[in-house]
Image (tube, rainbow, N blue to C red; front, side, top):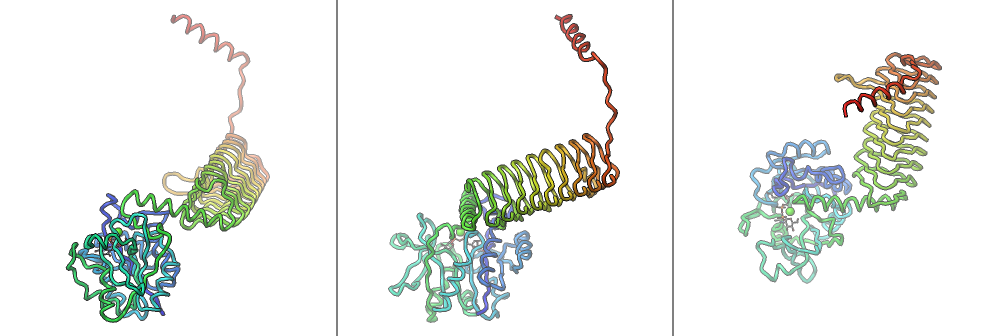
Length: 447
Ligand code: UD1
Ligand code: CA
């Protein structure tokens, strides 16, 4: 059966007190909404419609980037009304539709799969969980067959209903056509004067369709983000999950709780990551690579046998090949450092190629930017760049060439040549001693 999805994201997220729409806040480097879209996609959902606020341009742009469609809900009349707004886009979709909220970043593909499987049995399915603190969640009242009798929103519930600990997570699967038929029949005669998504099962029941309820054990998976504190809690839960996955995948993590992952970090089995490393988005570390403490990596690839850090910074476009050493306070951006090359200390390599086996001395800088454009530096195989060399790009240093320490290289250097731009050294015998004596006398005279 074909699968479509609707993600509700039209709320303003006022409790975040942010210029950014709530679902655009990030967990593990990806907006909340992105996590929900990815989990749905994983469950084979081919069309996803995101319901947005009229001012949610950023949400629509992001949804499009993730291959999802979007519609506008204006004004916000409740979760059932929001879902109904996807009707014109999906009403004729032949198959099953799943509804979820855009602020549940920890929801998994497995939960969506379970919803579809249960829906196929009974015609409708919802996800439940038992939070440690049921708080304001909608309560799920089951019948003797353990099918859903009804959901009572906290604000509409009596004390007996509030005592129920089974809560609604906000995920519902149903046949598409029927779903939008019921969504169009919702009423708002409740405490909040809203059209509740949670009334859909009651309408379905009247038409003879029963709703199965699947209980998910991991409470954190159903966590909804409404505040900064909940955003931080979601981040912590996601980091825990990513670290556990890495360990399960045979990644060496000396102090897992100190390593920060992005949603897309790829660490191959048997790479080693020391404490306090940050992986921003877009990083791949191959088997046999070693990332040392306090390094920050983003948009970079590190190959087998390479050692990065401590205190290294790899920025987007950094490609670190086999057996390369990138040491402390070395920054690499849009640069390929080829097999066995070394840049061990205090260096900036931007918009560059460093040939195999080249040695980059301490304090080397590729001067890649003139305030207007960016230019390439090309360093040949086996070249030796003396300490404190400034390479003014565009410039090429040939294979095996040497640059003298402290040189400012503005012209291409031929293979095998030595290039240096130093002023000649002068020496004045005894000058230092005489200088000190004079200064000392001046100081004494002032007393
Ligand atoms: C909802 C459920 C509740 C459930 C809880 C789980 C309803 C009526 N209640 O309550 O049973 O336990 O989630 O977290 O569904 N939204 C719109 N348009 C609207 C209203 C909401 O797009 O007009 C979106 C919000 O952006 C949000 C989601 O729907 O992403 C949920 O809305 P929210 O107001 O947070 O629902 P809750 O009161 O938490
Ligand atoms: Ca909520």
